[in-house]
Image (cartoon, rainbow, N blue to C red; front, side, top):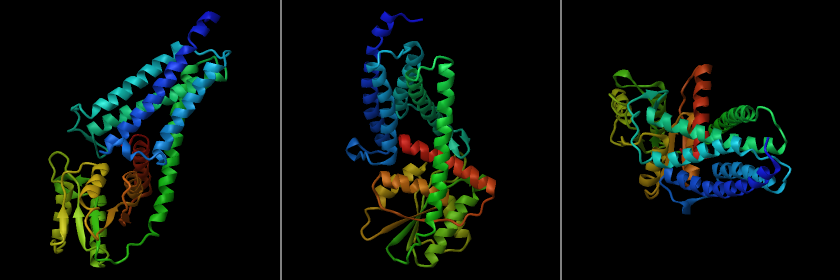
Length: 342
């Protein structure tokens, strides 16, 4: 049991935490924009991801302010402070990860490198600790006394699952709208095929071949006049763009208007490549070609970069289980992009 004197002494701690949390928000925005090779001068507070960051920060700050001004609330620093310290450590680690050479690059799982999975796990744990702090504060406010840490952790995990479900439903809704935006015939349209997995013996995955087939169809219909193939490679493989080009040659297509890029390793890098190398070409309209579930995130990244693109979805046929799996992966990726511009 804490004495009255102890309760009074620690009321200054929430004030310090509030100041640090405000600084953290600015630091997080800096990390997000540097992740996309942008500066804080590009900050758009109306961006959904930035609004989400602000919302969670305000929710925590309001709780801390209530603790400060309502003296009857017992603020248990022994429960709260360890999560606060872990959260601060993770935020600092997140910043330095871009300067650290991780040892997991050669590991690939679920189409992602070990480095990407490790960084994603750090961000997920950061999110968890932030939500735990929010729930702990509000459990203090509502005078819960039993198993506070367990309640906060369970509530945080459930909140993350609910967020994931909402993003999953968002993707389904936006996917349905993609078919309404047909690409009109225009000699100024250029098609950019986003890279996808390459199977053993440099065979294009169904996802990659489906994207290329769609690009070739658009080219034949004169809806695009050039095709750009993008994507780097996993260990022991040709690059995704080289495999895509070989696939086109094997079909007997003329490749004079087909170009390859083989340095980008992620959707983020491919959008940056488009922005830096293709958006500025005079009188050219960019048409990004990928799978429908993937294009939802592509459009969100383009919106973050304030660039205008058109999109065209491949006609990839998938089983129900595979479609659900891909949308869950995209829901995770889109959530991470909105919150942290990963």
